[in-house]
Image (cartoon, rainbow, N blue to C red):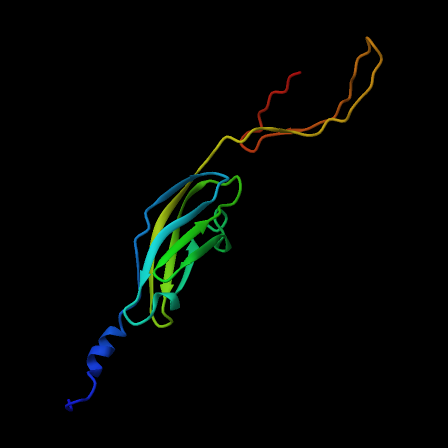
Length: 155
C-alpha cells in the first residue's frame, strides 16, 4: 500500500454489506378490515436510508394481493399497510424486501385474518297493495349468507 493512498480494502468490505431491515412482529386482524402503520426500520452502511427501495409480497395473493401491500415513511422509519380481500380469512406470510440496488435483505411475518360472522342479506321487496281480508301470495325475494346456505326465513 502506498502512503497517502485511500484504504480501498475497507471501502470494498463495507460495500458488500446488504441493507438491514428490522423485525416486524406477527399481526392479527379481523376479516373485512385493513391494517396500517406497522412500523419498522431500514438501514444501510453505504447508502442513505431515503435511497433504499422497500417492497412486499404475499404468500397468498387471493387473500392479500401484492398490490394491496403499501409502504410509507421517510428515511429509516417506514410503515407497511395491508388490505386483505373482503370476506376472506386465513393465515399468510408477508415478506418485506429492502434493496440498495446491489443487495437485498428480507424479513417476514405472519398475518392472521380472523373470520367474522357476516349478517345475512335480503333483497329489496317491492311494495304491494291488497284488499282488506285478502291474502298476498307470490312475493319474490332472495336471502343469502356468505357463511351458510342453511337459512330460516319467518314473518
